Length: 123
Image (cartoon, rainbow, N blue to C red; front, side, top):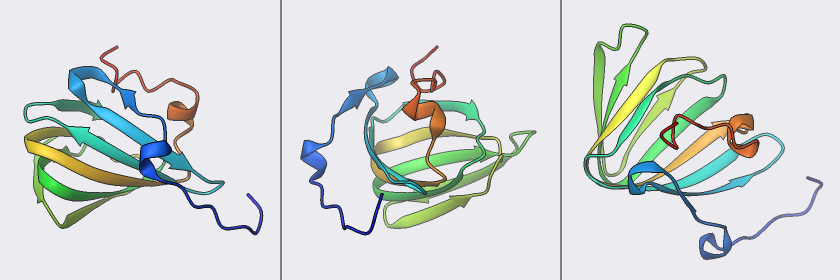
């Protein structure tokens, strides 16, 4: 990306509407990606895994993460809390209260960039 700073307004980043009224905007660099999500109460992010490390910062609302190959670990993440998911950890999420959150991924999510994020689009 070079040695120049990049300044963006979230409102200028394209908004994608995914399944269950989930919306997303994301910005990517060579080494990381940051995504802004709006998720309504009752929405579900199906179980999936990815090579990318993930940091989820819940800005408002409440999310319930279910973790591990046996999906038996549950962590509730509330506003002003963060969960860090290591590479290849199987995880899913259920939205307990309308949620606004930021996800940071390293490296960037190639599946999103290539439009292969079917788990989020209900396919």
